[in-house]
Length: 466
Ligand SMILES: Cc1ncc(COP(=O)(O)O)c(C=O)c1O
Image (cartoon, protein in one colour):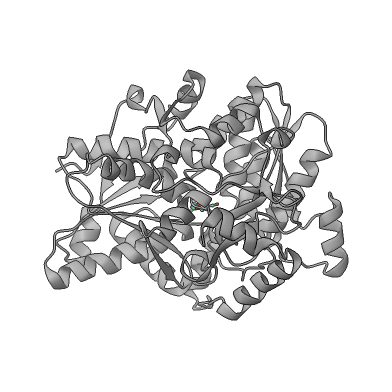
């Protein structure tokens, strides 16, 4: 039996898979709050590279991956698919567990799959500098890595709570030549306004996005780059699922369950979309269940409200159709920094709304417990984000032990935990609080939004259909 299923360099996919033409119903558009109508894409050209905007709206099912991008991906792709047989044995389960190891990339996660493409297109269009936000530091590291390869400058706003928890991430970004500051920062008007109220503000992804956007529009030849949520970002991540399909063919197996964690939805969608296409195009040999995991401290999918909300705290972005906790959400300082965003990708939210995805939430104590079980069996120390999925996978495998079902479970190990040792230390010392976000706060935040935008119910009716 193969432990590690590998592909050759030239088997990196030649096209990304775009889910837009295959969604169960058309994706509700982003709304411009000044017109209450769908955003005019030309307005976004000051923020994003033109080709990325084209991909964002494209209805082509397959989008070619430029050879220069494939050439960089070759540094670590195709990533190996592992059969977690030691974990199966440790759990005494009849389930077959596979994981796609995205932690083998130089920055340590799936994030460079899109960072490389985004840096490439910006370079091609003559852009000299990119700004971005980062939570856990994974995305900031990935963009620093990619901009360095294509000769662009990079400015990273890192959520202050993570900046303090994970100083090593900062060194990694510096090594690739990027600038990184804790957010809220004194570099932007919005950051300064928050620091004036609270000099120790812990920050949030929503705030860091606002700062990166403000920096982008106030500097020449600068564009903004986002590591999740948008269609083009998720599209670039589909190399994961496309490779996994080929790898499973080699061992003549097929998943009953495809699982992943969700911060904004890019790693999960990157694995899920190609299997979803197999199902809707009737190529899948059996039904596939899609399971998305998240923290109870940031329960967008399990408790969020499906409406239109801003993507950032300063309300600079268009309104996006998503399950949200409210854009003024300030997360508890849990260690899964990548899973602390107040909303999720519109495509993922549509699939969730249409019941294609089953969401599950876990507290961080049970998550780290699963991470340690996995590390003992498989050796790799997982990042806190994929450990949410590992919690689900272990629970499901133990359920299969009770019922005798030989379920095939596929998940992505979307990041390693080598920069999260402090989190493991706190877990071993029993210092991690479980954290649950109160539903009451979500309701209040959305009430505030609807008070501010009294026309929102009308837009909801028109574009969300209810
Ligand atoms: C390792 C890792 N996994 C998951 C995520 C969550 O983001 P997404 O849902 O877009 O994959 C992040 C975000 O920073 C991350 O660093």
